Length: 367
Ligand SMILES: NC(=O)c1ccc[n+]([C@@H]2O[C@H](COP(=O)([O-])OP(=O)(O)OC[C@H]3O[C@@H](n4cnc5c(N)ncnc54)[C@H](O)[C@@H]3O)[C@@H](O)[C@H]2O)c1
Ligand SMILES: [Zn+2]
Image 1 (cartoon, rainbow, N blue to C red):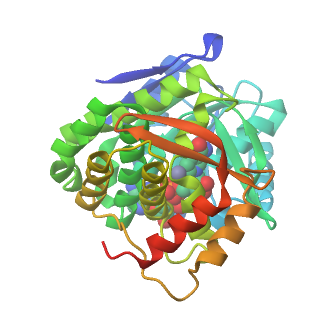
Image 2: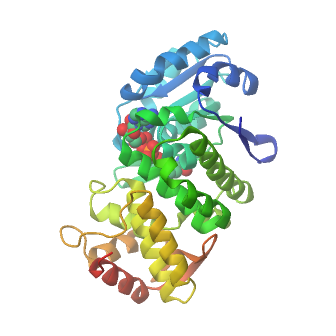
């Protein structure tokens, strides 16, 4: 059973990754957190599929548990829903020694984690991520958030989980595009942090796409280990953790101008990585060969590597979105650039003209 540890002194926690481990959730929680009562937060579709096994596993371990549901979709990450979950925690008489369990994708994880951080000034939090993106990215690292009408993730705090339980079998019911979105973040980990991991993804991609359990477990564990090492070195993103934003400045701009409808987050990140690679090439940091390897792996993952121009996407709108992004400093933009497969740098002083040139050529290019 692969276990990855996130090393944060007395707040260190394990990530358990094992096919079928959902049915042992109660025992795993009892081992690591010993909570007096838990509240499971989920959404209707996920609860329909996995609610029974989760509640059964908690019961079997003698843990008093109840479940509360919020609707699916990013809009569920709201202060209003946080308040509803808190209302339920109060009604269930959850105490400081109780725990909140997130059973779902990144939306549920971010919302439930936020409640766990603020209810009674903080209770134990357990992540049971069910989407690939949440398993390799959102559930590790302690960022919690809800959205505000002025922007995504505007309200939140850091609150590390006590335990992360990943069962790759639940991915069998995840829609294919959501699988691709998770693969994009895994490719990102390879490009920016680890050439061996990247090569492993190259070899394993066909098996990953058919959800081969062994390949998935290994690759998820690899991604979690990479994210864990970055989080351990820079929990609050004052330095190295910013590397994980590779592809995200361009990607967020694409999501913003298309009103979050055209692309899944991971698809926008895949396109953003292609644009970041082009910028890295322009600045003489990345070889053509490495840029091509990135593109081929994204293609092998079934991800888009080009945008159809027209509609809402234009150079000016992309630039405007990036200038509104929180990563802008004094007319220059902050970007994570790749220097080779397996390494990246954060650059604070990228001139807008270089970014404009990338947007223009990216929208024109056939790939
Ligand atoms: N905290 C962090 O560090 C962090 C990192 C990345 C993303 N996020 C956040 O995560 C969210 C995106 O997460 P996501 O991509 O998991 O989206 P999501 O939570 O909306 O899940 C995607 C869809 O898949 C469904 N689903 C999830 N698991 C399923 C399963 N096993 N079977 C069937 N359907 C399933 C969900 O109901 C949903 O409709 C965003 O809000 C983003 O801001 C947070
Ligand atoms: Zn992302």
